[in-house]
Image (cartoon, one colour):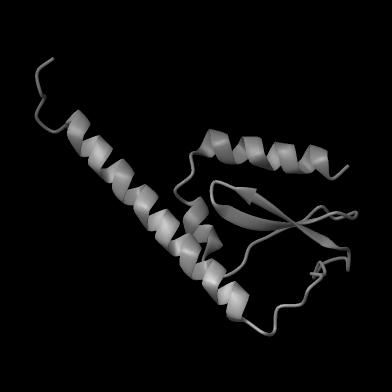
Length: 104
């Protein structure tokens, strides 16, 4: 298969996919380190909307806080939204559906 002008080669796609994965791992490590050293983080997180308990769930190396009570809100810490921006739309919708059914 010949390379077509204006289209990335397979090697180029692989290179950028590896770069994205390395960046996400590095960013996740930074956020985890900040969370661990942040003395203000309470042991039991409370939902800012309804006062319910938040449970931590991990998805693609991103830890989201999910309300286990009535509002079923999904809360992100600083920097986590930018990590989720690298997740495909279908995968993101699948995890939201999974979280929604798990909290019922």
